[in-house]
Image (cartoon, rainbow, N blue to C red; front, side, top):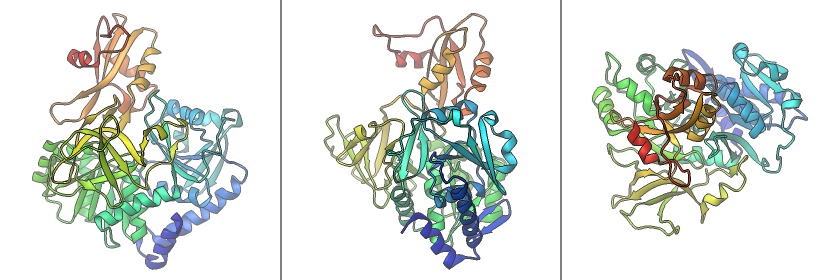
Length: 484
């Protein structure tokens, strides 16, 4: 079966049932199919000779899901674009990942950051399709690399340019299969997704999987802890999907009460700190299940037990190995690199040819994470090989932030890195800066705020005389940690 066939099948069985619920408004399965069929046909006609991918630039809203399936219907490649990204990031996507346009909510047109680059806009009611002017479109688009690709997500690149992660139809379907089979997702489930739909956690748990089985997806535009808790109490979802930072904030909310109807709370993006899990269980009476995975493979490991140390067991149809530096499989209890095998794995990075292939060993993807499988059969994460910083589930490449800061005329040298918050175990972004004497933290933050999305702005700024480096000029990161 093709991807859309699963939704058509559900519409045939559950046509009058709510597929999507948003702040009290409901969209039935048949209405959902009618929406994306209608818009998809129009997009196909309007973009008949236009072969560039289209970015979905929409917040958490049913229109995001409608836009995604409309592009699939039109046989256009859908890129999932973070709605928080501004002009700087969007221009980078056009230049480096060869986007040709964006689909947005019509009422948010005035907020679109690149209005001066718009060639034409097609209006489809609540959705609008923006096409970028010809002079800004890259002539270097590689159609051969895009053959069979239906959607793309982004991950941090080693140069600060996001990697465009490509997925074919079988990858997307496999990811949903792995999830729904592992948790026995059923039509009676109500899935409340409070994670950004552009993130793999939401994309793989809350877009295709629920629609395949006739479940209902619940979304809300306000993700503040009070509103999230009210939404849960008012709607009684059976599955709750959110990032670690929201779970942490929920434990600090006032007037909390038990969340009796939820059978599973799911967290991903980074391993949830034990203290947050314990506080959440104490406050709400339910355990948080960690979902481990990387963007390249999709969600892979799930911890459904009340275990505060491991990330759990592999999902259905996922195999995990621990490898040494010679790519030999290690025994139980030995620490090595976590490698994953699953059909949901990406087919490659569009703008980094060959890089993914260099990370594949006998079909297994090398995650860069260090871990071990203990005698209980569970996976334990022990650390990371890379310097990429995990900010509440979003990957930040320090090089990108460093490049922005180096563009400041009064900054002479800079090093950006992740610093562990000893209170809750999360990472925060820190910058050590060599600059003119008059420079203050607020100058650095203001400069970054004008050029970067909020989660890439350093929370800690330390001014020093020199950046510690070795004889080869490499930054001594352990010494950096000691400076903060």
